[in-house]
Each structure stands twice: as structure tokens, then as C-alpha cells.
Length: 226
Image 1 (cartoon, rainbow, N blue to C red):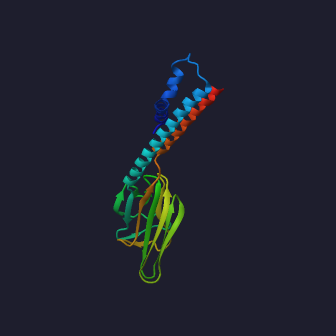
Image 2: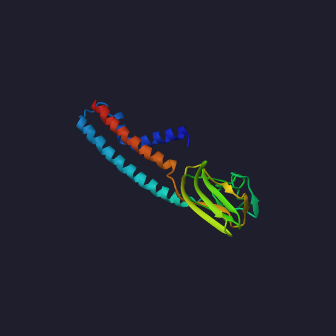
Image 3: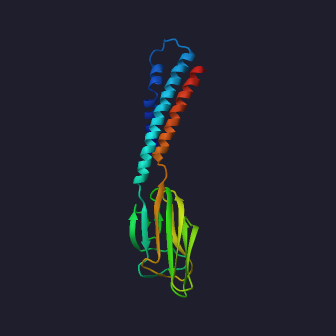
């Protein structure tokens, strides 16, 4: 939403939510009225305004909850065949089975959050006899977990991590130490899904408009009293 749209929404809100006060000020300039009478009128208007805004927030909360349920982000990507990767490089899971929301990029091996919220990720590694493999789960360049498998026989290890991501932040798997030959198929994979989306910008904007309306009426009272 552009800055012009934001200001337009605030302006329209002021017009719709304070009509009685504006009409009172702009109509009969010769009417004598005490401050107490005016304060009573404005207080009534403020009470009505609060009730209307409360109803608005209730409706927005309901819409937000519905929208959060409708937002689905999920992906599952694995390595096909046997893949050799450079030491300390990003693992590119090239077989993508699920990619709802188009957050995962098989070319870069990175998942970019299409919406902000709390996500749950799984990283699984696999090793053959005499092999050790260690992969880091990374968020924006910071290690958040490590999956290690190796030495004795065929081993696999899966780690799970619940992470909050802002929109656009990235998650990926990175080679740490050990063998750089990864056995593919379903043995080595990265997956994740959105648990709960953040509140939307529209919700926060409407809440701000509620506060602006309240402050506007209070400033009218203070101004008249002076």
C-alpha cells in the first residue's frame, strides 16, 4: 500500500467517524453553548466512535483469522540420485515434490518466506558405512540447527526447528563437515510449512486509524476548552 493510499484511508476514516462533531462545528456559529454541554456532546460522540471502532476491530480480527487459515505455505525438496557438493556450500535439493506458495527455489537451494510468520522446518541427512555427513540449517546466514549422520553402518538423522521468518527472509541447508557425496532419493531432504501467519499490514493500519480518530476528538475537546 502506497503512502498516498494510507493518507487517503486516514482522511476518509476521519470523515466517516466524526461527522457529528464536524457538523456541530461547521453549522450554526451563533448558537451559544457552554463548554460542559459541548463536552457532553463530544463525549457521546467519542463513546459512539469507540463502539464503532470496537466493532471494526472485531470484524477485522475475524477476517484476519480467516485469511490466516487460507494462507498455505509448504514445501518438500530432496536430492535425486547421488550428488557431490563443494565443502561449506549450500545444498541444492533438486527434486521438488511440493512447493505451495513458491517459496523454495531449487536453483539456489533456498526457501524464501512468501509471508511472515512461524514456520516448522525439517532437515534430514543420510550416511553410508564409513561416511559422516553434517549439514547446518541456516537462517539469514546464522546456524539454527545441525543434522549429523555417520560412521557406523547406514544412518539417518532428522532435525526439526520452529522459526519465525519475516517476509523475504531465507532458510537453507549448508554443508559443514564430512563427506561431500550425498546419497539421494528420500534419504536427504529439506521441508517445511507455515504454522501461523503474522498479522497483516491492513490490520495494523486499521488499528492506527482507530487511535487517530480517538486522538482527534480529544484534541477538539482540549482546543475548545482553551
